[in-house]
Structure formats: C-alpha cells, structure tokens
Length: 289
Image 1 (cartoon, helix red, strand yellow):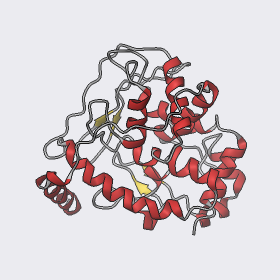
Image 2 (cartoon, helix red, strand yellow; image 1 turned 60 degrees about the horizontal axis):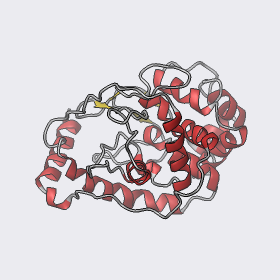
Image 3 (cartoon, rainbow, N blue to C red; image 1 turned 180 degrees about the vertical axis):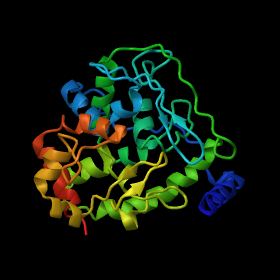
Image 4 (tube, rainbow, N blue to C red; image 1 turned 180 degrees about the horizontal axis):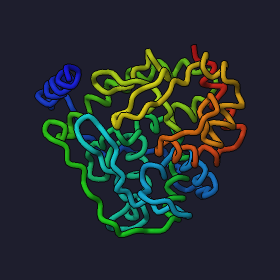
C-alpha cells in the first residue's frame, strides 16, 4: 500500500509539471517505402513481436486483431485497440509514416502519446523495413469494424503529455544496455521484437524497466509471475529446456507445464520462430552477466 501511495505521489508530481512533457508530432523516416513489402517476413516479425497475444481477443486462423484485450496496470485497465485493416475502426487509413511513428515512437496519427503498455520503447530498435513488413502483413489480415473501447484512466494518468517525460527517462536507461550488447540477432529479438524485458525485468517506482536488475523476474500488474531469465538459471536448465521446451512446447525450465494464459499465447508465437532464432534468444540471454 505504501509503495502504491508513493507511486501515485510521484506521478502526481509529474502531472504538475506537464510543461516538461511533449505533445509529439509525426516524424519523417528514410525513403524505404518504395521497396516491395515482404509478407512472409511481416508474418514472421508479427509473431516475434507478439502482436496477436495482445490484439486478438479470440483465437482464429488467420487472426483477427480487433483489440479489446485488457492489460492490467496500477492505474486501471489499458484496452488494446483494433489494428485490423478496417478504415474506420482499425488502421486501414494509416500511412506508412503514421504506422512507423506509432510502433517506434509511441505516437498516434493525431499526435498523442500512446500508453507504454504498447511496448514501443522496445520496438524503437526494430528496423524500418521489419516494421513496414509488419504493416503490410497486418493489412492482409481480415478487417473488423469492432469499435475501440477507449482506455479511461483517472487524472493525472489520463493526461498523455506527461508520458513524454516517462519516455525520456526510459530512453536514457535503455541506451546503456543496448550499446553493450554483443550478440546482435539475439539482442534484436530479445530487447526489441519479442520485448522479453517488458515482463521479465522488474519495474522501478516510475514503471520504467529496472535495467540494473534485467531479466531477474517480475510480478506483473495482474499478479502473474514472470520468472527470471538469468544466465545462471538458463545454463543450469540447459539450452534444449529453453529453446525447445519453453519456446516450443510451453514448458517451464523444470519441465512442468505453463499455466499462465498470456505466456501460453506468447509461446504460440515463439514456436513459429526458426530454431536458429530461438537459439539466438538463448545465446543472448545466457551471455548477459
């Protein structure tokens, strides 16, 4: 209870200094738009990024990413939006630039900050090409006219300008870890596409990832436990227990079955990755001190 009160006090102070925040605009990106999109890569990167587990309320094949999934936060539920190709309810009218700004900068087409339940602080490290391939793949999926149920958080958390301050803090914290990475493909998947640290790294009082304690496990806002993915734990379990047991068959490192529904949905996506990419994830995580 005490930590919750402190958390509200700190964010209240942030709201009092909203002039430090930003009302972002659309940023232009290099002219890569003329390249023909790779739908196969787009489908692959959509699986790597876990889009289905957050934006599909019900399982289907192909998936219908019409949102409506509630993501727990200390301030109230954040509701995922419709990202199907529907031109009114979804993202069918978005330009490529708007999609890049949303995924890599957390900025909506109307210039508002997205709540960081959308892991854009991880996705900012994705290449423009991969993001545009994801956009092309999403555009190929079934459209839905399901109307978004907007997230409504209490003041001051409803004021999105203050998220600009949070972005600045988190950006400074992440840069040091990212520059120190040595295994490029594994780093790309772990830190950005799959955003493993969003769940498996504990949070600071400002809800930024505590990179000094990276991948040492966390209790999520809904009470679920994301276990440690430390070098010692992974090496003790062995590569096969993680690469095949966990990421393909949905087993814990001790061989028991997963019970958390959200992680089971994540595994439904990680099993679609190549064996080499799953091994790269293991190699990167097990290389971190």
